[in-house]
Length: 271
Image (cartoon, rainbow, N blue to C red):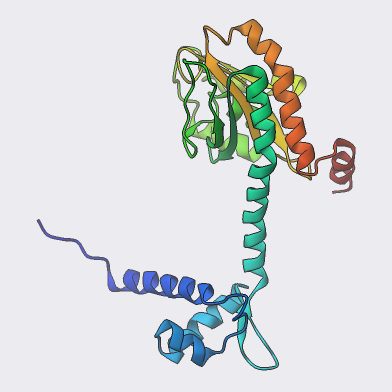
């Protein structure tokens, strides 16, 4: 069998990206400013190559060049990206005790999910201690339109986000999956009115779930907390009883993230 090789131009691009990453990772608290010659030695690259990489990174805001000594240091874009990662880590940390309390109170599996394109991705999952459980690995993705967590997030997204999901199609996973666009819009309107979402065997036969949206400091819905369980335990009556607990947990995490309804509403009016 003939082995396919990458074109020379593609190899060059990949090599440049790899070297750019290596260059950025050279900086540290001790070596926060480094000159071209020193960078070349550490990376074992020609000065001309390092200068070209550094210039590109300066244009992208990833590096800055000191006017005093000509050395390079990490730019504001790297700081902004680091802050974004830190906020995600803070989000996870702030949510965990709330999720644990919700699991202990309901004795059912509790999940934290975010929206990724037209799917949700679970970033935390705490299993029930009962024998029959809804096991979910962190990082698992499921369709947003057929899950309670997904619907809880989609109900509060901008119109273009919903339009993209509808354009991709509402695939049927069970007989209960909502596949009609207009019916799905009505479902989201109901979620906005009552403040929580449910999924009654819509993604998987034998499983029900209830979820509520989590907001960041500006009031944007960035995640959802959900409870999931087998239909034998999570009856419609039990699911309705758990809904206020899920909403309360989501509101608690939102508050921890700096969300205040009045302040957020005022900011949106000014915007």
